[in-house]
Every structure is written in structure tokens, then in C-alpha cells.
Image 1 (cartoon, rainbow, N blue to C red):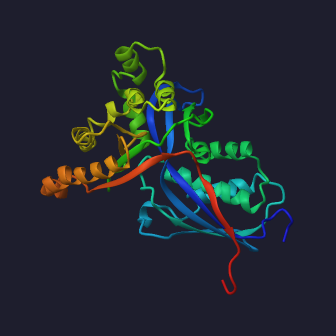
Image 2: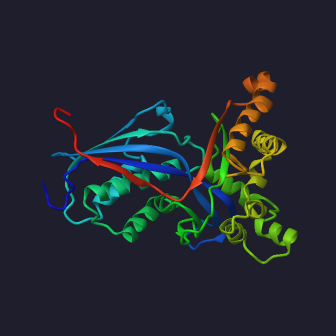
Image 3: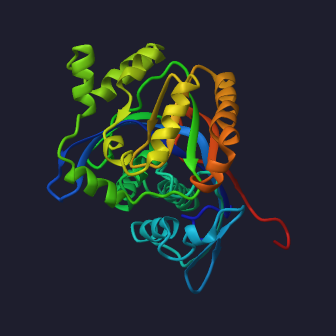
Length: 344
């Protein structure tokens, strides 16, 4: 085997989802993309991917789902970000090798939820490729490739709590946090919102009350929301930090998707410390004080929102999927490297 290759050829990677605790549009970049400023965190809701490498005369990447994710919603061909990441990596290194790469994906990050599930998978693919090729690329080089694959991929590699600017791909250093933030996450099962539509609706809105304007108006501070929130999180003052959480897109999404506004109002009525949409939606996250409160809020939500309105939930609204989660300090990470056993 080429000395640049890892002799082990099964690599397991965990790929965490992310949430946007603050999200603002701050302008337009020279390439036409919207410029954003967002405070993001990785959470312990994650996909698990297993990459099996073997030499092959014809290069090929085969993807399969290891659990019950809906195949029609998860492309298994060359357009998948996992395949794109593997091809991009091979085109960026010296002495690439023709490989058969079999990838098994256990999807726990909901599809179409705006939680960077596809980007997390791409980050996992970059890590697996670099592990197999014995770290030919540095962390900085991997981050450069990640940015080419999508705005969220660099963060999914880096993880932690960070402020993203530009398209969201220019990241601050990891911000200190004294303890994890506990969350309940809700997504209407069959609802997916087009990100281009959200940006278009934002551009067409006649008036947006930006998050930093709300912060300045309410608290007489010049701090930007992400900086304000991060500062108090680093001091262990969760309640104070939550004053800066928010999302400019809610103003254009909620009028078209009443269900999302109802979910937010229900969480707040049931005692959530804060509740907002992440990114361009449709996922809603609620912040609570600890893991016990998170489990209670999840149960209370089911009773209040669904069981008490069973007919409405069955006819008017999609089923609501709920997860209890918390913030973590890692991005995508290699969990195990091994060789197949005899006969495998």
C-alpha cells in the first residue's frame, strides 16, 4: 500500500448538527450572497458515518442509509455533499488513489431542518478522507475545502460556539462557555422551507427590525447580539445572554407558516426561557435551565400541543418531532479507525 495511506480502512465519524442562536442579515457581499452575522453552536444531535475504503480500478462512492431516513429526501448519488467532499479532497492532494468508498450513514439530524445535516456529513467526509490519507492536508487546508462545499461546512468541522460572518463561513475562535445550554428542538415532520425563498422574502420585506436594533433599543448597548450573548455565556449568565438571542428571518417566515409561530408560543407558555427559529427554518429551539427541565418541556409540549389537539394535529398540522439536546464543544470528529475482519 502507498506509504501515504492509512493501513486501516474503516473510519467512523460523528457529525454534529448546529443551531443559530443569533442570526442577522448585515449586507450584501460582492459575489451577490447575503452577508450574515450569526452566533452558532454545535449540539449533541448528530449523524454517524462509517467510511470503508478499498483500492479499485474504477473510482466509486457508494452511499447507503443505515436507519429509517427517507431515501427520497436524501440523495444517494454524486450530488450528495459526501460524494462532493470526497471528490474535492482527492483533487486537492498529491498522489490520489483510485478508491471504492462505501459510506453508511445513520441519520439522526432531521433532513431539511436547517440544522446543517448535509454540511455536517460533508465535514465528516473531509475528516475521513484526511484520516485515510494520513493527514496530507492541514486543518487550515481542510477549512478552505470546507468553504468551497458550503457556508456551513467550515463550522461543522470546527464546532463549539463561534460567531460566523461573511456567508457564515468566516469563523471566530471558539468562544468560552462555562456549561452546556439545554434545549428542546421541534420540527414539523414534513415541513421544509426553501432557503432561497426565505432570502427573497427578506429582500422584499418593506421593514425589518433587526436583532441588533432590538438589543440597542431594549438594553441601551452598542454590543452586537452574538458578542453580547457570548460574553454572558462565558460568565455563566445564561438568562442574561438569552436577551440577545433571536433571528431576523422570523419576521418573514412566521406570517407564511403560522404553525411555527404556534410552536414558539407554546414553548414559551410552557416555561421555556427563550425560543427561536434556527437559520432559515423550519426548526424551532427552546432553551431551558437543565436536562430535567428539557425532558419535562418535551412531555408537556406533546400533551399541550398534540394530545390536547389531536384532531387539529392530524388534519391541520404535520406531526411534530421533538428532540432533547445540549450544546457541545466539538465539530465533526473521527471516533474509530479499524481494519475489516477476515472474510469481510
